[in-house]
Length: 57
Image 1 (spheres, rainbow, N blue to C red):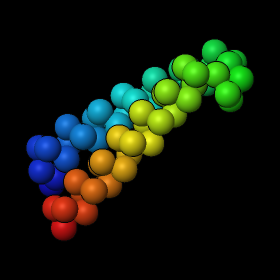
Image 2 (cartoon, rainbow, N blue to C red):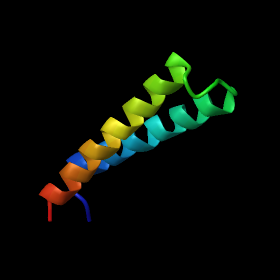
Image 3 (cartoon, rainbow, N blue to C red):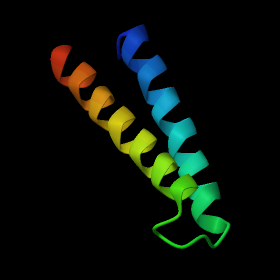
Image 4 (cartoon, rainbow, N blue to C red):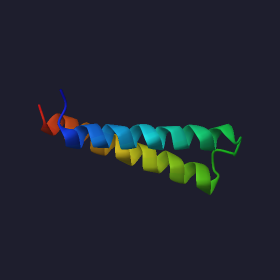
């Protein structure tokens, strides 16, 4: 059972992954600012989630 904070972080990570997926589905070039923002937002949140998960071990 994960801590509530970790669950919230995981839920946010999934939301950002879906947003990234939807942005990629638009067919934008990899260099497009919108695509890069979505990618960076997901990657940063994924890293935060990883740290939160490690902190609860």
